[in-house]
Structures are given as C-alpha cells and as structure tokens.
Amino acid sequence: MRTSNPALSDKAFDVDRAAARGEVMTINGTVNKTGILLCLLWVAAIFTWEKTMAVAQAGENPAVLYPWMIGGAIGGLVLAMITIFKKTVAPYTAPLYAVVEGLVLGVLSAFFELQFPGIVFQAVLLTFGTLLALLFAYKTGVIKATENFKLGVAAATGGIFVVYLISMVLGFFGVSIPLIHESGIVGIGFSLFVVVIAALNLVLDFDFIENGAAKGAPKYLEWYGAFGLLVTLIWLYIELLRLLSKLRSR
Image (tube, rainbow, N blue to C red; front, side, top):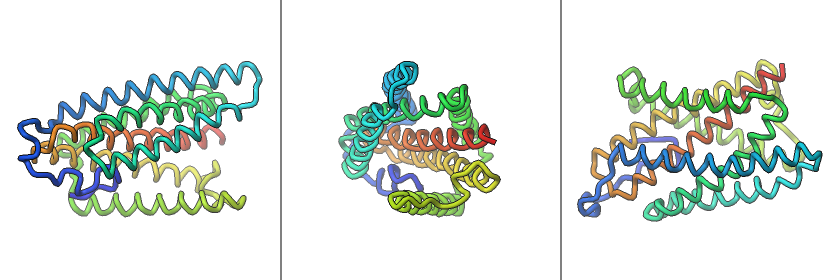
C-alpha cells in the first residue's frame, strides 16, 4: 500500500497479528477516535479564537497572539514526529497534537474571519462536506485507490511540499514565488489544485485504514489512524481558507 500522508506510511501497519493479543484495530474504533480528536481540536480552537477576537475588539497589537501560533506549530511538529516514529505512543500524543493544532487554527481562523467575515464557516462546511463526499465515493467504488492513483497523488503531494518548502526558505530572504500566493487566476488555480490533492489524500487514508483493520493491526493503531486523518483534514481546511480568501479578494 502507498499513501502520500507521511503519518500513514506503508510500514505503519506492518505488524504481526500476534502482537495485538486479541485487541485489534477496527474501522469503527478509528472513526470514534477521530471524533475525539476533532472535539479536542475544536475546544482548543475556540479558546484561541475568543482570545484573538478579544484582542481585535480591544484594538491591541495582534502580535501578542503570535506565541500561541508559533508555540502550537512547533509543538504540533514535535508531537507529529514522535507519533510517526513511535506509533505505540499514539494514544497519548495524538490527543496532544489535536490540542496544540487547535490553538494554532483558532488564531489563524480568527485572522481570516476578521478580514473576510463568514469565511471560516464556509471553510468548515466545505472541509466536512468534502470528507463525507469522498467517503461516500470510496465506499461505493466510484473512486478506487489503485496503485496508479496512489502514485499520482503521492507525486503531486510531494511536488506541493517542495514548492511550499522553497517558498518558506525564500521568505526568510524577503523573496516570494510570484503569482501562486496572489488572488489572480494563477494563484486561484494553484490553490484549487492543492485543495484537490489534499482531498484525494483522504481517499488514500480511507484505503489505508481499511486495509490496516483487515490485517488485524494492534488496537493502539486506531489512534494512529485517527491522527493521520486529522493531519489531512487540517491541511485541507487551511488550503480551503487560502482558496476562499483569494476568491473573496477579487
């Protein structure tokens, strides 16, 4: 199996059935744990959302909120790396990851909302609408995670990662890649492409988790599978915010 989600690599479920000792991963268990992670993320996001709105209403410098974003982003990266390389701790690190990412998304979402009222509600609806639509398409066989499909999505995801990495490095020198971050046709087209690829990663994640459950992976990997889905959903949500903001800017 292949998946472009780094949290759900081919080796994630490469375990001996005996290791499970009767406690095996199930799809329902993974769905339930995904729900728990989303609730934790939502609670944390509401906390920093309200702080951001309070700062904006008071007319204070929004820079006071940067520690929440920077600290959450660094904490999320560290927790993600720990989870990926030490899957057995996923029941502990996945919930923590959801909380720290929620802190980041709360501030980020509030910033977008202050610029474009109503944009967050639209992005949330589109994110979960996309999730349900692709899940339906996957379960009914409309979309199948064939090897060619997996390779194509993985290659596109890798290309996007390289572009973002280059953009981040150039940003340190005050240089930006032209057009793709703007609200012109090229910028909107690029964001739309990234949204599509992020959404297609959900199909790979569904396929991977289904196969992991079928192989009788250990119970703790339900948390790991839920963590992988959360990573993709967060990416999709952020990209939808970017796309909508470009459309609203025109």
